[in-house]
Length: 192
Image (cartoon, rainbow, N blue to C red; front, side, top):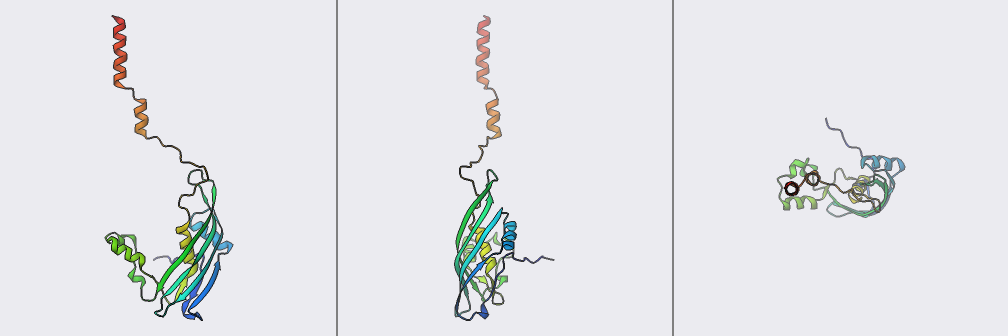
């Protein structure tokens, strides 16, 4: 039995209840929602998460969610593990369509293995399914945050330690056989 995912930052928009074809919406995550998202994304903290979105419905029933997402987050430095603050901004731009079913999308990564590059690109450009005229714009924003944040945060000036290969170390420690022969030759000449 599969466990259903419950988004930490959920803001449901019912597109069939929108008064106009275009609506502006500002959403902001609460402290509790930010803490839960920080745990999900393995961050030190999310100090703010906000989005100003426009929801636009076209005559064919497709819905565009477009706007600016901004956040203040703190991650651990990949080299020192010290906290690194980051300002994250990204443009949210997603098309939802009632003409696309969740069944049309791959259900697991194995489904993508045998697809050509053209088929993969077509999947990337395909609209998201619009199910029951509902869109969770909070989860959309959370996903854009996950993609937009620095995957390898570093403190200013922090560098990765230089790694020495085991073979290189062994070669440096291993005596040069020709040097040994030269030393032996010198010893034999002194004995003469």
